Image (tube, rainbow, N blue to C red):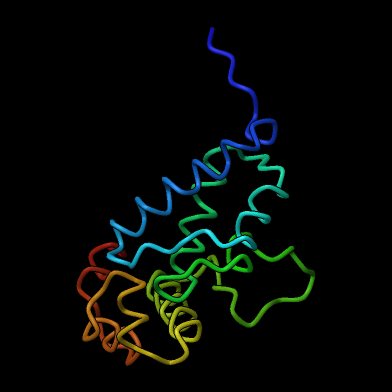
Length: 147
């Protein structure tokens, strides 16, 4: 059997893994490669990573998508602590797929400061498709999923 200590016990590995993941996601999303700032490195070291490498991967990808292109913000690295109050930016679920998609587009647009081109890039869709989703026009790919 292969015994691998939990990520929380391999502090030095966290930063190395994060650097590799940042490079991978920057390439796959077409973003400029951000450096890991001292704040980000401190955040990486201070978290216990109970979900191990999978949690780290998800956190890095989330931060890459939420942070402005070419940067990685420590505040975007870990999701905010859950609260009892419903956040206005939370996507309704369960809901019809078209509503979930529209809510995701609206939240991404909000995070992009209203910049539709940036929001479309972050979502991996074209700007015209983003506009169709916002206007409520039927999206054939969503219609196919709902049938």
